[in-house]
Image (cartoon, rainbow, N blue to C red; front, side):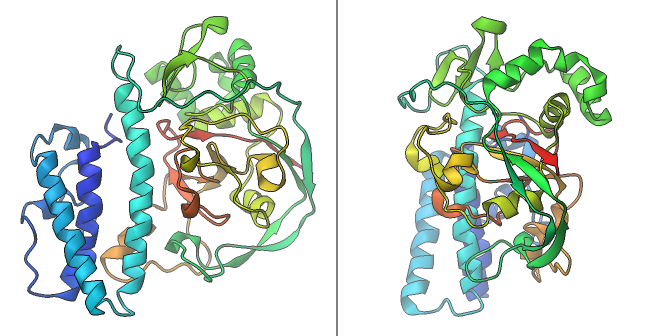
Length: 383
């Protein structure tokens, strides 16, 4: 699948980031570990040079994994030595911080890419063997109301933030209500059985065209019919559980479900207002479940609404620059800014996200047809 990359490439690319943006910046005479790696493991930084085509990363039989580990050790030792000497001064410290958070992003991508790869075979492949959580009855949706007002969203700059979270700014939010939990597999089955994938009235035009072209009739990794449905997980294939949050949906599917349910997706400002004062409680990668779990029975705070972890939540907000946004100078300005078109914003993190990586202001983004990430939905209503 052209959006995914081999684990070997992820390891080499995150190493390339430190070599290119830290070591080369420290020393004009720095000699790269291998001159061809500058092209092979450059993702999309056109100002740095050419790139190996993304759809062909899976065809890279060389360098070997052993060679990639040697590359990683070489760069790690060089960066560590520079830190110990005190060479990484104030101008480069933000770059180093960015590299660490960039590596966390790729840790998550490794899991989602491995899942997609394992799903391509009829063998019972599994990344892990996590125990299933207890089955719980799904409580009816409840709604939390929020008053309309002028609010501030965006990061306040007190800790690390990606450039797309800045600057903090004012937004007008009309009164709205937000569902107290994520939509479940059982509720999504009702949408399917009611003909949701056959009703063009529910779908955006592009979504309906993609549905017809790709033959979608259920979320990614689902198989079987009605009571015999199965789902592929990082823990292998198993029967679909109706109490778990639905995941691996495109924006188009999430939007169609919301229309069918007589609701809508929240805006990212609404989501951030709801999550901004909450602790980051939830099912993250550290739980080692590697799959969304039902909402805990005795949850409190953000966990009671499943605002963090489990699945990335599609919002109805296009991924666009905030008022006053300026991309960083130089090549790192390509990190986020150039993707601010034809993408939709997601919030909250997933079961594959490191806990320390997420925050209420974090803005993830993907094209509206993307399904290989742990992406799901919650509902919102006006008033």
